[in-house]
Figure 1 (tube, rainbow, N blue to C red):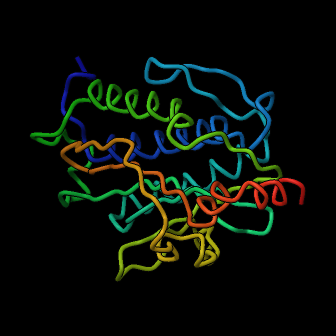
Figure 2: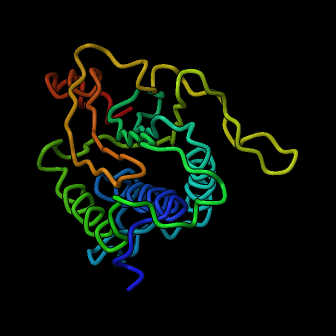
Length: 231
């Protein structure tokens, strides 16, 4: 059966990119970035997930994932960071998808099964466990109490790489990120929580969530929390 065969390079790229898209929608729902009625419940990887029904939001996420797919295929991607932020651009939580390619595959071999890689079916099972943990993340992070939240998807490339994926003559669909919102702008007081990791035998993927110093300070100061919500 095809699902039991070892992954090809292209299957790994598509699988990781698709999972990131599903995870972003689910995070938006479980962290209450937008009202629950904006989402519809679906099933993916044999587990319930949530998908936005807003066309503009869906296109933003899909466009980002297309660019992520291109960089994954090129082997230049280091991290994808989904940052949840306040109305004045202060980061609250960073969901960090860290990736690492474990081998180089020639172009003519990218649709050939890689010896030692996990199967398509096993990859789906791993992604199911990621999503189960995500749907329960509120127990670890607490309720998202602030109004007027927003989010951004940030791509971080390997140190010596520049955005290189091109669609014809158009530049990559990225603008420079606000440094404070990237993993390079993390304060020492931020807290990191590991969610899950998988080694596909082609691309390693891990997911962690980081609570910012700003959020932790709000949790310690109920009066300031009320001011932020009222703003």
